[in-house]
Image (cartoon, rainbow, N blue to C red):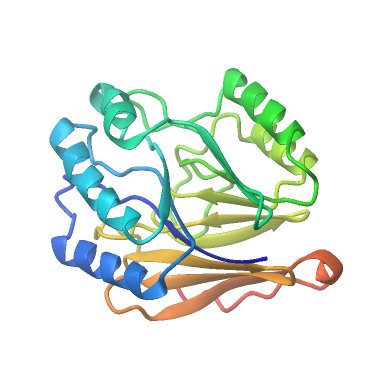
Length: 264
């Protein structure tokens, strides 16, 4: 198996710190990378309004001319009854995609709560997720994506808005040996690993809502039979640095490799 996945989040169309220039550069960078899949981990709008959704839909349509795109909603998308627009203009709030030829599956969940920034998966979605995971063959590489960060993110100030049922969610994911979790929300790229599960957060790709000296960015993920490589890419110019390298299968007992904390 060889897959290249672009992970982006927190586009915030309509946000006063949104950058049209960065949007165009992001599209160009993704075209250059030519990924197999694009995952957008929530917050495509600023306040869930219809004009913001229309702008986001136009951009997502452009990305779909490059590759398959899978989108989950974030807390900003759920403001002002915005999930109605999400369903009509973007797609289902939860989904499962299986590529049996490449032995990979992606499951999307909605962690948003209407008009508040806290998030949760919820009992019904956890039951749905458990049922779907039970049906997936054990040799498939399994990815789960939702917006809110599953674990706290370093260098983002006071901890806020973590997933309210993160403990139950984490237990379910690890018990099913999910390989990778993709989140957004905190506007900072980060990589954790718990047991054999990689948890990757993407930063804000095309806004300047940033912590400290961080910069607009997105993630590139390379998955093959040997390893998972995660890179943070600077939207402005395409420069990238390694977030983490995790060894898979017969290499799984090797220690993961991390770069220095270059983005702090």
